[in-house]
Image (cartoon, rainbow, N blue to C red; front, side, top):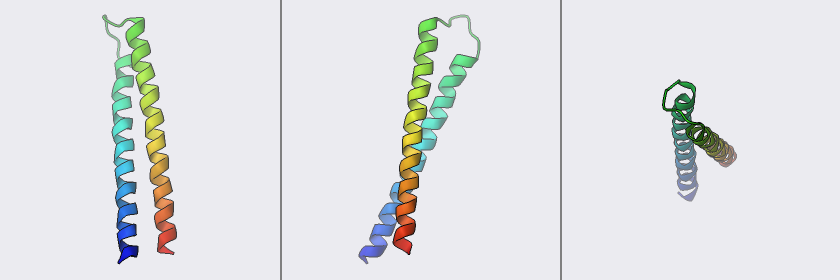
Length: 80
């Protein structure tokens, strides 16, 4: 019983971290589009803020995907 509970918990964590990663990735794409699309009201401060936010969100997304991979490996080792 405990073995199946542990597998379910690992599977849920892996799925959650994947969702977090994809959500942050999508948000970073929208912020990057804010930089790329030309506008008359763009200032250097707005551009730097959007690019900084994009980089931070991409970094967080990478961390969440790395955690999802870790939980996937843990899940595979539990199956063996």
